[in-house]
Image (cartoon, rainbow, N blue to C red):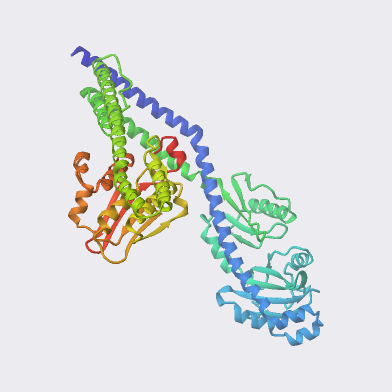
Length: 600
């Protein structure tokens, strides 16, 4: 009981001390670092929000620009611009050109309020104005001195070499709202540097205001769009008198091209700037800092609630656990379970000099002993598998020799020595390849060379009565496979599939890649076999039983492949009595370099 009380006291004090210290440390770290991080995160989120708004504005402008590009389809008008036709003649001839283009190509939802076509000398050719009334009035010519519409920006753009579409705007005093202006130069298609005119399209700002409203997260936020070197073209939100003066000065700097910072602190407000390089159409916002700190205030309140709750729960749990002394035993049980699941190097850590510590130490020593025994058993099993593999491979080598020697003897009596010489050469290559026990692996290309030597010998024996077809993909020729994996299957097809069949006889050998594995098929059109026979070939329990069978090759190869690559690989057989048999080898693709470094 004395030891139990000491351990109980230590665990209780340790749990309470660590918990209390962790909560205090967490609170202090949050106040020291997290507040700025949350504030910065809020800034980043708002910046990304404005980027999304810019993407949507870009898409709208791009759509309008695509419609303006259809002006090149007005071939007669473009041709007159090319030939510098007198402006008087063009006005008479193309008086309704602007009206026809707008009504044909724009939808009502595009909100086009005026449309102007100019030649390269800034002379108006055709004008479209929608619903001209005292309250809805637009200039006949943007360069009309009696109508202030920011035309100097257009003139400066037209006289420049800038080929990108201009986005500008002006405040229409008749309508009491901003108008968005899109200006696109018209070039001679055959001479892209030859400007022959330009088009000015003024649209109602409603569509763009709707986009800005989607991304305006607060009524206290001020948002505007302004190209560098130009006046603001859209504004959303209200500012106090002192703030309006600062923003007006800031906008003046932008118009002069002096604004550089993307985020500028200004008193209790923050400026955000998101560029749009394609159309030089930048977005700005002025947000009160208190909005950015709102998330921080909520998190601080939540943190205080969490700290108090965790402190109470930790005290209760620590008392119960320390009193029952179950935590060390649970750790030991968990360690034992993880070792059972495969983490065999795992050991009990952090053991103390008490009863549980001594138990954990003994537990670790027991695991070390078991691990050593398992390692020895694995090495012994590995050596046994290697011996079985070499024994299985050796079975295949003499299987072919006897029939071939009989054939050579018969041919020597019946024919001249030329064919016997060729037969001997092929047979010599076969023996050399088959008896090379120092190299248990080969590649598909060498296996096919060996197979063709074998087929030549068999053709001599069977007088060429069998047709052979090879369908080998080039990419698999260097793939490594166990030596003598294909020829025994072809031999089995000749001896058991085609020997007693009638009619045309054929063997097809195919090698290809399927789902990352190497697939080799040997297909014959012989007598086939039953499902029972297939089971006997593939499911023999041991090598000794297999040696008693006539089809030693297939089972031998199947055992070798499974031993080398695992149970999911090996030999499969599909056969139909009277139709033929297909034997398939399925093995993982391996290069010679991989096998050389021990990766089978």
